[in-house]
Amino acid sequence: MKARIAVLPGDGIGPEVTTAAVAVLRAVGASGGHDFTFTEYAIGGIAIDTQGDPLPPATLAACKSADAVLLGAVGGPQWSDPNSKVRPEQGLLGLRAALGVYANLRPVRVHPKLVALSPLKDEKLRNVDLLFLRELTGGAYFGAKTRSADTATDECKYTVAEIERVSRRAFVLAQARSKRVTSVDKANVLETSRLWRSTVTRVARDYPDVALEHQLVDSMAMLLLTRPSAYDVIVTENLFGDILTDEAAALAGSLGLLPSASLGDGKVGLYEPIHGSAPDIAGKGLANPLGAILSAALLLRHSLELHESALALEAAVDAVIERGVLTSDLGGSATTTEVTAAVLKALQAGNRAQEAA
Image (cartoon, rainbow, N blue to C red; front, side):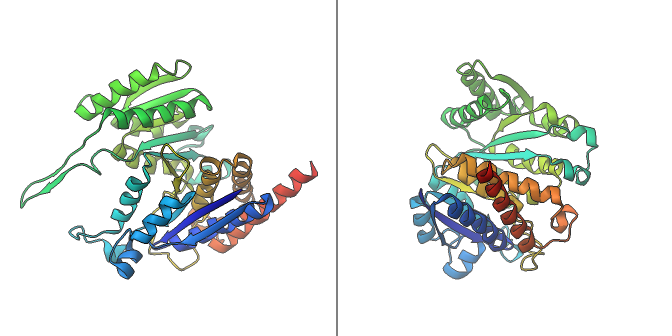
């Protein structure tokens, strides 16, 4: 198959981890006889510095015409003034809105070899396999904002349509897993959460084979640490999802491990590791590329529908973790390049084994 992939390296360690992700996608393309083309564009802080715009028109146009978008990270201390009218994060938020992606998928699995890196006891981490769906287009991030000398407001706004579409995606994904959905809100306090709960409850009637549970966000924050294996698909609004998924990263041992996919109604998706730009280690070869590589696996699965290739890439990552070829955030001493090379080697070994079978 042919696919055009827009690559947005961004800031900090973004260029390093996207280079790793592109390398494994090239290998997948070559082994499968696919024609993948990759073109880089600026976004975030580097785009502000070079073009005065965190989301330049050329970048936006390329992403809209691509089959998938692979992003590294945006932001850094040189652009961190909260009073600035132009910030790197505006590029990412604008891109999400322009692509119409509304469901942010964040899988969290705990590899047995990395259990010791989590602050939780071993027995709490057995069989942890979570899939978060964070709504991306509504809530406080996109609501009206005001600021005076002694007052500030951030409007949190949701529509029924926004809640319906992300909850339906959650139920469909749950049907292919363990048929359980947990919806997280703050319905005892917030009107938006009351709308959220009533809408999700109504949508659930269309999926009678899926069990629905509601949790308040403060309770969920505790339950993620006390019994994480009790949950499977978790759907929630924008701000709550942002916070809970970073908390859940502690289960896996490092932010550097976790991928994400931002999806809409079409096949074009935005794929990025959930970690930030980590400017303190940028350019030192210390960045963990596995989150970006696993994001590439999500790209193969959701935008290109190459499910076997996605599974093969995820298996290669598991093999590398099993072998202990790890960056320092996971207790190892391997460089970004060495981990990437190990994944490529494991991918090749997997391909040979499959051919032999």
